Image 1: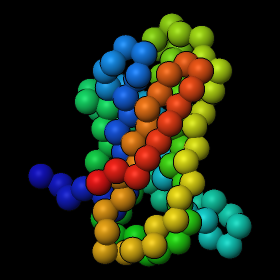
Image 2: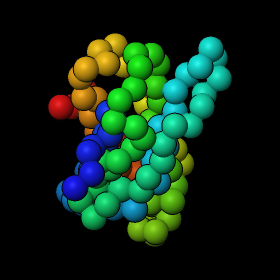
Image 3: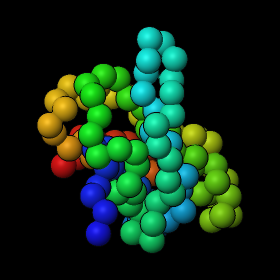
Length: 114
């Protein structure tokens, strides 16, 4: 079993009430105004990504981007948001950061998970 990454995510399709499998996800770090990709993955059958980059990250500003256009196209659903980007501050290098996404074709929400 591999260790989970410092940042993980879980995408739920709130319209169908199920996990959103097959969503491409990218993790980036802000390095003096330039976003640098440090990891990428695709959500599994449970809508989760547990291997999104390294197991340890330094404090700083990070961004998780979700390619929602790919997901909705595979579902044959017309959607308004082709991409969702969530920017957050990782302030505690010892804490795990879980960034869930609740998704629908015309809205989304997120929160700090555990």
